[in-house]
Length: 147
Image 1 (cartoon, helix red, strand yellow):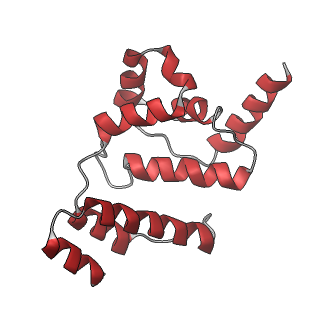
Image 2: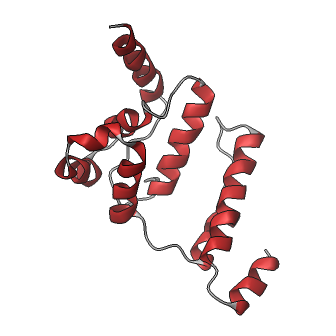
């Protein structure tokens, strides 16, 4: 009973601050999957008491539309497996990452109001790491050193 109440408190606390994710962005202000997952991570760090076991449930409760339908079609077991849930969402709603698209995301990223400088810099470092992982040739590698 105590665990159920703790989960309810966490969901209520996060619900007011988190944006719902519906799938592919269709209008300005809609989050991409990566932005949604970054927001989950930021809220998780800020609250300080969200375990990896609680994250899939929190993610599921913040899914709407096609994203929620995709998870429901895959089965109830996804509500308990964070890595598998993220893999399913990535497969369906993440465009292939290119150095160019990640470079644009890196340079257009603005620090959010509720984000500390440390959290903002960590997001930028993760974006840069994803850029290095997306490099597919010597020319891209050289261009990346100029970023």
